[in-house]
Length: 266
Image (cartoon, rainbow, N blue to C red; front, side, top):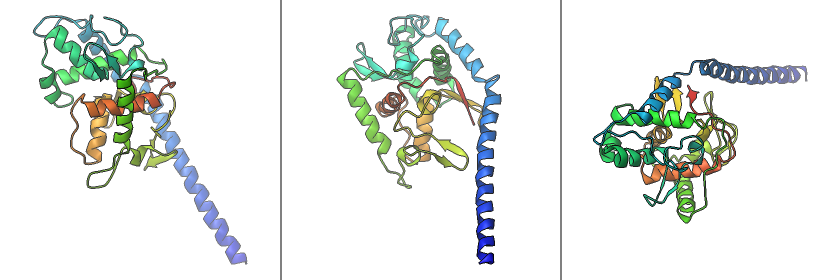
């Protein structure tokens, strides 16, 4: 009896020690992130994005100051937290990046097909990431209110939901494999449950974000692209229907949470 009691005490102590170590590690990561927020390199992209918005560029030598992001030409503040949404002029549901492509084509004369083919972090695609960072920062702290008023928006949500749970690839993964349960993590990386509102500045509400691990600024389009890569799926079209539909699903699920953009990630 004494031996069994001693064994239970040892096992219990080891389990408690393991839990404390894990909690300590997670807390340390959060402290690390908090320290990084002071002087977030995303500030540089934000400044670049504001400059790009106001600078005359492209074949038409025009700025983006007349771009309509959903609240009228030139209005930026508050638009980020209401995207993706339906736009009557294109007759499409668009996220911020696809909408910027439209404005860069119509106002400045850029070729959106060529931009979409450009690798992330290069050329005009890098400029779009900077624009997204600045536009997102203009709505920091505001609550997401991604609309579901039109049939096209509701359809996009349902398509995004199906894509979120679609399993495939050599590992039979889906987005839901990592992001459909509470208190899940890979190693010490927390995985928010994106099937519901995960809270302020988590999941959809935290992108675009600066990634410390590779020194890059990532937009939501880049983040979704990398999710497909990790699932070993074919690379999705940049600002295509699939990634926009996923953004609608994630955005609507995040309604009510406050935007933390531009955030910082590991």
